[in-house]
Length: 200
Image (cartoon, rainbow, N blue to C red; front, side):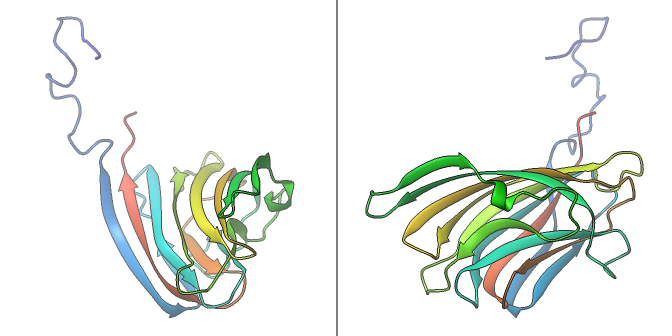
């Protein structure tokens, strides 16, 4: 708890708004054989969180991806540097792993970043997770982001968890984000965009 000089707390003194740190739902998109889902960043919020639930591909063994735009969605080609760690465990308990995966990294690439890899398209296969992007409206700094996803790996009966972290290497304001599969449509699933105001 923080104090000011007369011994009262900053919260008691009314220095903070109750909305600071709160997660405010800004937009919801529900896929139905959708080629992609796009959102526009809201400059009123320092942090944007995207929660994707039961994302199901139309095509088997395809990757769920993101990219950013600085020109209101005309192009999705922002330069990114990223890193990936993943864990897996199969249903037969014969294969487990926790490792860095260089094949999922980007190094100053304008391509799409995978958030989930090779998701199956059977009726019971899908993926869920979240993505946080920090201060996308900054015109001074690069834009850091991180994601945590869990999904049914379509190349076998695997529970797969992906951790992605990186930055959009531009000081230009990010205007939009696009979610898509590397092949085929987003058959089903929901993505929610939340705004969070920073405490500082």
